[in-house]
Length: 514
Image 1 (cartoon, helix red, strand yellow):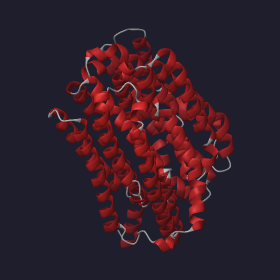
Image 2 (tube, one colour):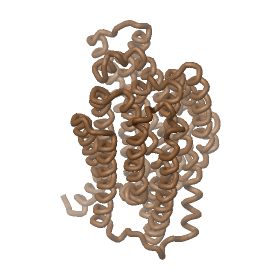
Image 3 (tube, helix red, strand yellow):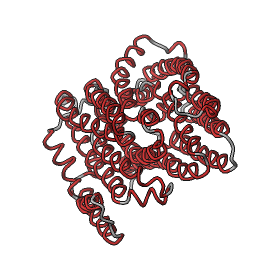
Image 4 (cartoon, one colour):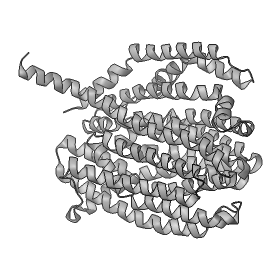
């Protein structure tokens, strides 16, 4: 074989390998988050007083709000670095990076001010936390939230790696540090140390992650660095236009998932442990899906650069099929064995309250994430203005329903509010956003529902049938579950092999390469 032909073969194979590598990197990163989500609750619940564990959960929830002040700039950096790379425009790339880095540094300063206000107001925000824990809770918020605030500029570094399609770098860095944090928190809890020691471990590993990302950036892409001369008003305006709509999406996500634990703490403090444990399983499900979907963002940006509306539409339907399969195959088993999972995981005393909460949250998660593929591609194509209404309507309806139902029914009411918001969000995508984004992302909504959602869901019918039986109180025998899994996985295999998911993704990657 001639050298030219071998080179051509390598160029054909390389995009396929890059797609697989990026997917595996994101799955590894999601696996680290899953490791923490699955490892910590059963250990902490058993080795901490219930009120201390509830306070720790609220610390993590409150400190996590700081991360929302990223305002979509990491996604913007990844998108525009990929776009500039396609256009061979290093000037735009450097201007985007420097301007975004400056914006993130400013966001970090603002978040520190807001964090100290929340720390001061902690007794007012969480009136049911015992007074003896307030001091520890405040110090824990400062250490965990402060480390996230200081690390906000590092989002620009992660965005560069996404744009360069080097997902393994942030995945490895974040994955390893999360695993270290989880192990460290477990060790501290087993040693009987306080919440302050646990927060010191988390804060330290957060800062180590930032330092590692900076080191990798200087090694892999030393030409990309912060330059004050590259900060541009026009670039800031471009990023503002991109991130404004994305910020609406982020804040809407905050309304959907960010206030649930706070509402439970106010309306039904005794169920906070069960709700937080169920929410950690939901984090595992959604993290797994987004780890896969984030791989397609640079390719969607490239297709948009080529003004390939039809290609983006086909990619949307293809990715939706895969998303539905992932959601059903990971979520339905949780519905079937919700009680045994909770019993083994955190103890039988949490099953009675935790089982209905977990079931409602799993169903809500499946419904709301059906549209995740569409949202991801819209954002990657820089058309997020088309999806402002959908997440906003979901967030507002979610918060309103959670407050009302939570006031009446406690923790299960807050979960039902999430389910209400999920249906509103999906309906808004179908009825409002998709018709308006059609000039850029061209697909037929009937085909989207039938081929992208209904068809893959149909192939998991054996698991869905068992889930319906389990909700009536029937204990599903392991043999029946095993047979249903084999049939459903076989159906997924049929979709992957015959409906064109793998070839379609492969072809899109090849076409997107210069």
